[in-house]
Image 1 (cartoon, rainbow, N blue to C red):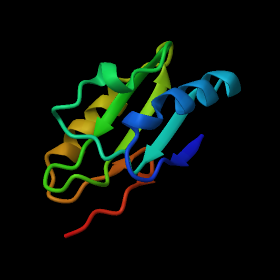
Image 2: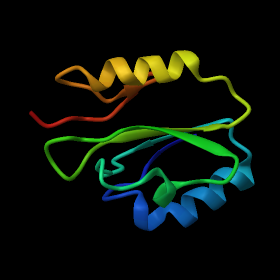
Image 3: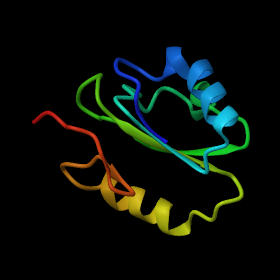
Length: 102
């Protein structure tokens, strides 16, 4: 599943979670999450899924995240997310791009 939640994931997490679980997606890629580091993963938690986030550091909008079923191995995904986090322009998880303002 690839979805744009437009203008923040947090207030829409119940709908996103219900849809992801009902459709039984292995992976769910979300753009325009608008999440910041101060928002805990528990706020956007989906049961039986782990979340990998790339939050925007400078502005309050943009950001991407990937939900994956907890049974899926993530060593490479987490490594890629950490590499992306340390670059000036990031927003790619498994080919998912979030448009980042300069």
